[in-house]
Image (cartoon, one colour):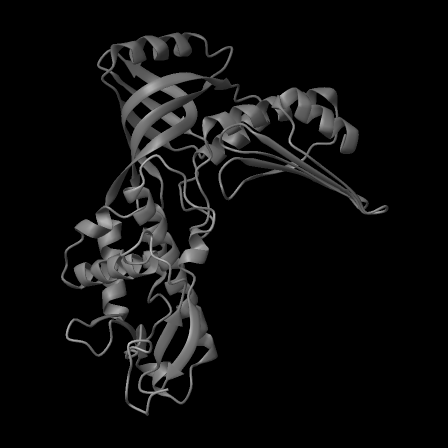
Length: 373
């Protein structure tokens, strides 16, 4: 044990991780309506950890427990503009290295510091998840309320209402490059390697490309619009951070048929393709063409057979979720971004469950026929 005010190697001096100051945070205790500000910071920590992992491990999937590695636990609150202390998994990424949480919090500090100094390059390089989470920090502050990172040190930075306003102003003028799949109707194909794509939300997106084989593919698709006027394109595009909408397609790598706009399922799935990464309050991932095509095959077959039609939703982790809910049963069929199916059925009367991983659309349809048609 150590005397009060004394520290040991096993019990280093504790400094607050964050400091909340001003307004609600200057009173006795921690305001209950301020807890959400801690949750917002936790969300930013998780999203920044994902970004750092992806940067340091290109091509590798995110660890399933990445949120656990940086999950913060509030272990102490001290008076004096509400200093908060956190505990988290202390394990480093490799021996002798900083922990993922330490790396993450350094990156968050650098992000806030750059915004305060009107240097928005780190923000421009941030992932959609980080941008969405950063935008939430300070959104609930009023007056002089602020969050201080590395409080009571020479390099403390404070992020309050003015800084949040500057962040939003900067984002309104930013455009971000993304890569992925878009679905829409092809219009105005020109010999100058230009065309327009009308997406699932009815927005006309100007597009251009450089590969001559793409012009040939698009010309063929344009001539076969009686077969399928909706097409998918694998492309680089630019989004507006203000609302996540696609404002320009800068390059096209591949294109092919998707479906007919007369098919309501194809039109609905096209709207899923138009959803940006970070939809659903920052939680949603983009839905890729493999999931959309597999879901379209299943849904079109269900309608053609006259079976009960499901409600459909974009899955938060990418893919499409199809759901049948009745008074006596609940059936869910999900297809992920790699076109793998997962099926679940619950009979509410008998409490019997069925869980399967159908192989392909035909197998998925047999599961639906047994449990939900």
